[in-house]
Image (cartoon, rainbow, N blue to C red; front, side, top):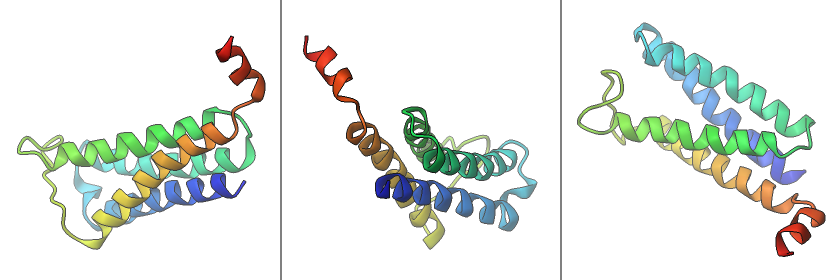
Length: 126
């Protein structure tokens, strides 16, 4: 359960950063602005699912959340940007979000590995 809690906190931190940045900077962006709000809402849902539903889906969602959010930021740092938004690896918010997204990705994978059922492992061995 501690691993699920840590993963849920990582997801929530990323969502909080995106909500903060929406209020601070991105509320006027046509595509990226709504995506930041969706990110914040999704973080709350995924964190709640991680803590309340002992199923493989929530950790998989955490992995997808971390990978897609970090991936979108990486695309925004390229010369093409993301929907006209160009970012750089500068500022504490960037590194906090990136660290939490990596932790969400790794934490989700760790939860999946730790909670796999013995019967599923035995089926794979036969």
